[in-house]
Amino acid sequence: MLLIQKIFTEHGSAYLQKYGKNMPPLHKKALIAIMNCRMPSLGGQTYYCLNCKEYHYSYHSCQNRHCPICQNKDAEEWLTKQKQLLLPLTYFLATFTIPENFRHMTRQNQKLIFNILFKAGADSLKLLAKDEKYLGAEIGMIGILHTWTRAMFYHPHVHFLIAGGGLGKDGRRIRFSDDDFLMHVKPLSIIFKAKFRDALQEKAPELFDKIPLSVWKNKWVVHIKSVGSGENALKYMAPYVFRVAIANSRILKFENSKVTFRYTNSKTGKSIIVTVEAFEFIRRFLQHVLPYKFMKVRYYGLFAAKNKEKLKTFSKLLYVDHIDSANNNKTKPSLICCPKCGNPMIMIETFSKGDLPRAP
Image (cartoon, rainbow, N blue to C red; front, side, top):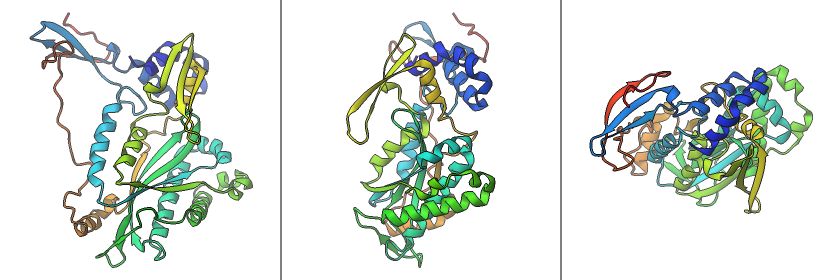
């Protein structure tokens, strides 16, 4: 059992009893799913090792996308598929951040604000990329939503992994960026804020009227940097697709109803150790549960599904012939091996949720 699940198992019921009436349904669902993941209550399969002459049980995972237990494998599979989209170009990582004095409203209106955040960021990048002062081309990018700091506080922002080259306006030539420069951040930030503001005013005028003027007076933080081939950036981004808030490896201790974990300060690079009550740990974790079926990974420009033909043309111009949909590959099911001897086992039964295995 992972330490995260242990924390939820030992304190989740009490947390529900105290705060359950005021918790969003999706937060309750995630909490209960994590408590029961890979437990006999969810059912599973019974396997038998012919070599050791022993039975072994494999319990079902909860399949909740916020569960740290059953998402590690998905992260690896996603990373493998995304690598097929990487082109022989320099890549850039752009980050668009929601201002601190607007985050409370964001958390109360997540689906609306996150959709606007994605579109405003992507449209800003595409607009400047088409400017002849920069690339003068249509670019491709992958956007991933990220809502937490390393200390698990609420900090919504979107990362865009951008290919440093694009398809020219004539649709037949490649325009390349410099290895260390794609576009200036200052105009990008100004355009981003304007597009975000206009979209919010159009889609939710009542909410827009409640926003303090200071939100629009503040500078909206946008950052962009070169990341080389793009593979390292994908490795950095992959865990955020299938993990919420914290990796189990960062939890140092769980005792006396307190959780001690470490994180690295992004400015100083120093490791910081924090100890919080179990309830506070659960609260920080659950605040990053996303709206139902919300897509936290999105593809824009040349990488958008509607632009498959443009992407094929672009890849051919780069002498790349393997570019295709990153979602068409299926992994073969792996054999279940005996934890003692390593030999493949045979499955002898499946038992449903709420049932017990019949085999000894």
